[in-house]
Image 1 (cartoon, rainbow, N blue to C red):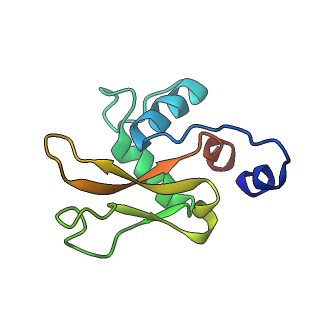
Image 2: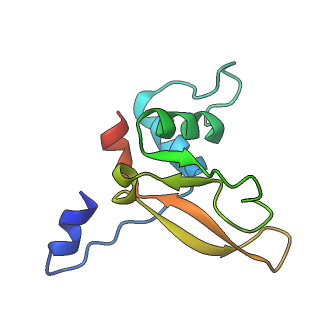
Length: 111
């Protein structure tokens, strides 16, 4: 889907969102909890597991990824057209980190 958008003469704006916000959208769509115990309606941990299971991302094999500012998850070839790794300031510090963000359209693929 994202590849098709690049070919359009008029750019289409599609907001990149965190896995937390992606989980919230997913819960709104399916209407049930994303947490194993049902206590949290939008678990980013479970959303990451879903993205891995659907072949959209993998865990970063670098065990020092978090310390070195790398994303904790990397998109697969299948997931690259639905995501981007962005630079952002880490919470509570001036350190710049990389974070994997998703286009909401990925929900159409993982449903």
